[in-house]
Length: 168
Image 1 (cartoon, helix red, strand yellow):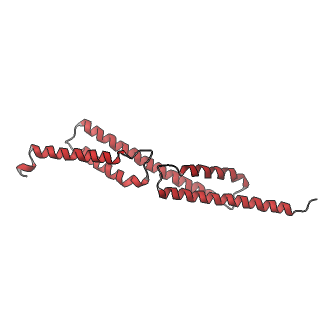
Image 2 (spheres, helix red, strand yellow; image 1 turned 90 degrees about the vertical axis):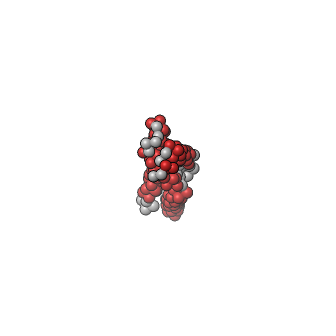
Image 3 (cartoon, rainbow, N blue to C red; image 1 turned 45 degrees about the vertical axis):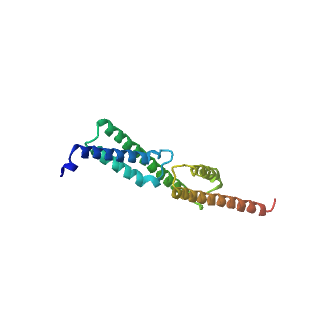
């Protein structure tokens, strides 16, 4: 080391650089909230969390600053949990749609299928969904609509059968 990179000025500059990195990491993710975070934010959140963990490990920060860093790490982890929960919801929707069997569905299932379609149509407005997740939900809705069409077709066939029976 030379005198230029180990004196007080060097350490002050290093602390200033680290402080700027901390502020940048927090600022970059501060617009992301539990209301609008999506799976598209996963990498950015992971990068910010790693940067913050690196800063927290640095001995140049006060306990108050380390507490602030940890609070931001906790906020990012909460956002990651929202992303995980949203993906689980989408997977559950797909499983529910997949459980609708066109070969065994009856007219008794019609109200349940209509309710499912309505709830999933509302879910499409969720700001936490990526476009890919919305597409997956839409596919589940389309599958459920096919089930409704099958119920209507079966009901029509039944009505036609009754209509073709001669009156006694």
